[in-house]
Length: 131
Image (cartoon, rainbow, N blue to C red; front, side, top):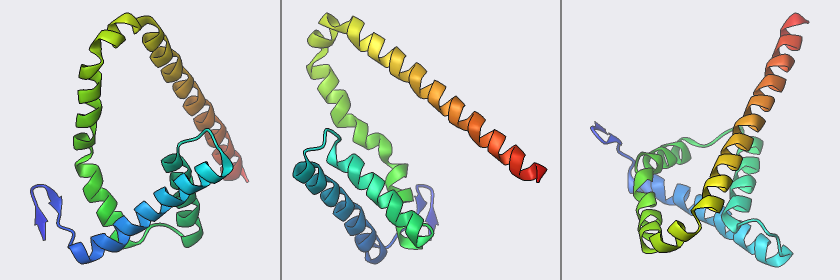
């Protein structure tokens, strides 16, 4: 039943979807520890989840609805990060230049890579449509 906050997802469909998400996070963390990888475990779990979804042909309705509900409340997950920033505001003030440089360089790099990938994909699509 729709509401102002979004689609209501019954707990019976949320539990398997949340379990799947947490299992992939756990497997990612285990892989990180076992292999000594410098990548965070949840990132590895996310890549594994992506592979699983590609093999299955996409997410199930339950997973789609559950993740949609989580994304609607994503801003709540930034509260702990904002609190951490406020606790370390003195350190941020002391090290503002490296922080700003890292933010600017990573943003520019992300935009450049995204633009390059888009350019490659558009050329590929043009070649396919020309055939």
